[in-house]
Length: 443
Image (cartoon, rainbow, N blue to C red; front, side, top):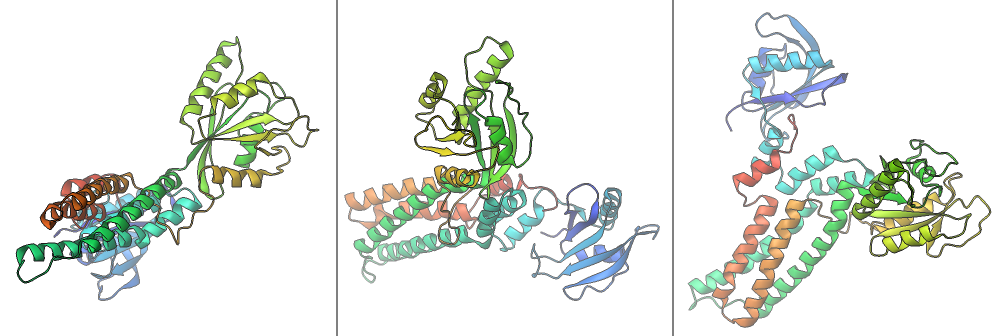
């Protein structure tokens, strides 16, 4: 790339500090035209004054962070102008930078240049976006692991093993008189071990995707079981209206919370019962619709009253769906035991920590270990792994049905290609453009 780009790298609005980033071969020249700083000989932070290009009127007193190629995010010369965080000031500063010779960066173009410079692979590029959008402790930890390159390292390791065995096969095919065939036992072992690795990565990817996107948890039950009180208790603030009158909640109420470091969307629903009230009836219908799409349903029962037909109907409805039974109101004199349930008091907070642990356990996220396991959280990467796994199965079938290597080589080449597309070591420009289209300008 032979042009210099610029964009505002901080969120729009007013703040203490804003950053205008410049990257490219003329980054230092552009910065020098509109600032009192003229020396960009080493990586440093330089105080300076910014002024209009044509009138030389002072715009702001700033700090210029200087990064010389290749020791920068993009691998190019980079200047980051740290100015005061006025929205008007930042826009004005960017305008002067563009007048001085830079062009406005496209969405994700700084990170795209980092990828093209070999600073990041595609899994790390996607991790950059995930780090920016992380909304919980778990999702941030996962994004940072991917940014460190855990997916890249594993996939490149597998790809290197296939490239090695493929080179041995092709050498044996090209020079049959001089180079012996690699042992079929060695090839079979590689394929079988890789199949196990793919299976594990794909199994763990469901956890990764859930950690990244967060879980939808629906609170359901008959009226007056304390669903709204539990909703407020899990949120740690009062959002739902709570009264002693059954049927207070007429429509689904949603809010985001964190449970055990996982981002969740809690959905408080209308009480499930037969009713002639048109508004409440519509709320009940919406409640049942939410049950069909929830990652987990908390079936809330009143521990201080007997089991009703409505309770039984809810359990029957949830029989084939992920759910957790919650017996609420244990601060009141209990009249009934609910089997296989977590007993809590939304009013006093009793056992809410136990409920949080049970929720993570039900979502299979209780024992997530980012240091030992790889949790792929990108649908694109998962799709590539599924493709590679299907080709691998064909390769194993070919190995069993034909003892000659030329029948096997095409499948190994396909796997190498698919894994290269996953990391970006062998990927089309169309895929690259598709990935960076989802980035914000300035990153």
